[in-house]
Image (tube, rainbow, N blue to C red; front, side):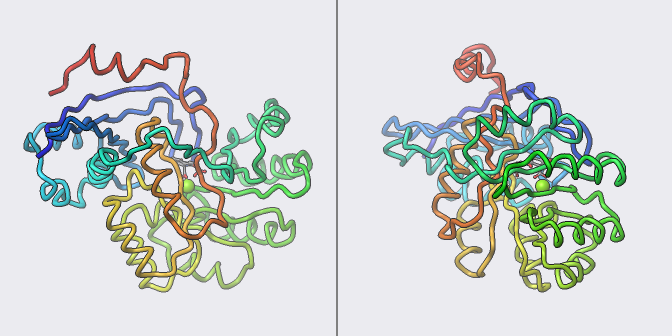
Length: 321
Ligand SMILES: O=C(O)CCC(=O)C1=CC=C[C@@H](O)[C@@H]1C(=O)O
Ligand SMILES: [Mg+2]
């Protein structure tokens, strides 16, 4: 049995993220601490992303307030798939208990750096390229008008060194006609690794057709935000890329079973979680056998790291349970 505690946190993003979903300024979540009878401690993070279909923060708080304490392993693996961020957090805390070398190097060498959206990329681009050894970068589209973004894109690729791969993420905000324009350009310029979620999840068939009509990869993200959606999209014929956000995907064990059951082309992606959730997600990504795709866990600092004791302060200054 495992006694556990939780604390709700709010951390301002150092660089607010502008996407088709809107402007994201504060990452809110819950840190959980599991303690085994022999004193071992395991940490986990509930990092909701409701616009991707996960539970909301308030739903996760109510779930934590109603969950038994102490917990059994059975109760952890019985958490409903209605709470995928909670499933990830409790299973990863359970696994964290057994991690001998918690400080084992996890930071990926092959990662994708998320560039500032739109024209904001240009003032800092040279510094970002100089500071990052990776050759994979990601840039959000479907935020400004197509005309504006096509102009910015031309300027951007002129500034990128040879050999750089770019991922374009529309967060489901393009029309079919706009997707075809981007894909035609991508096929011609050969710098785009894939276009992520060009259309909304409701248009899987249309994205499948685009994947047949163009050579540039298409990656599903919002369409495959949890285990049930991954399996459904595969069974409906999707053989393109699956962007997996472990922290909102649901059961870790369930994800392992899926990638063993189906030959999935996975790209692991962050939900701008804190270091607690990041470690668990990166451990899982390291287990995934295919290594060709850069991890969507750019080393950029999402948070102001001038407060390294934030977790300790959280634990001593607030008691949610
Ligand atoms: O996947 C990556 O390279 C970084 C993470 C990332 O792009 C995202 C994280 C969280 C919310 C989203 O707007 C965005 C995405 O859509 O993938
Ligand atoms: Mg995405």
